[in-house]
Length: 174
Image (cartoon, rainbow, N blue to C red; front, side):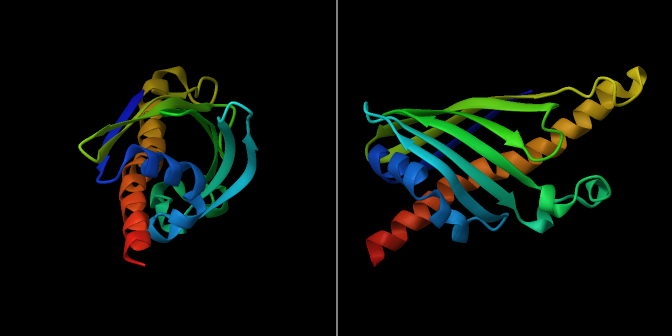
C-alpha cells in the first residue's frame, strides 16, 4: 500500500531539513498524538550525511478501541531508522508490534520555492498476515490492519510539518 503526504512549511529548505533531522525530540510538544521521540543512535558521517535511529511513542489515545484487545498502549511505538542527505532522507519504520509482518520504507524530499519548503513523503507499507487468518479472510483483514497502521503513521507525517513550522515560529519570536 502506497502512502504519500505533501506538506508546505514557510521556511527555507535548510531550516526545515535541519529541524526535522536535529530537533525532532523538541517537536513532541507540537505533536498531540505523540508522547515521546527519543534519539537512540546518531552517527555523523565524514561526508556530512547523518544516520539516526529515533524511537517514537504514540499517545495512548491513538490506539483505536477495537485494537486495544490486541495491542497494548505500551506497544504503540516504532523505530524510525533514517539516513539523511543534503536534500532528502531515506527511512524505514519498524513497528513495536507485528514487527516481522509489517514493513514501511520510504523517502522524504525537500524542495524550496520562494522561501517555502515542500516536504514530500512517499513510502510503501507492506503487511503480511498469511498464516494468521483463514485464506478467505486474508484480504479483508490485511486491508483493515493496513488502514489501522496508516491511521497511526499518516497523521504523524502530516503533523510533522506543522510542528516544524510552530517550532521555527517559536525560535523566531523568542
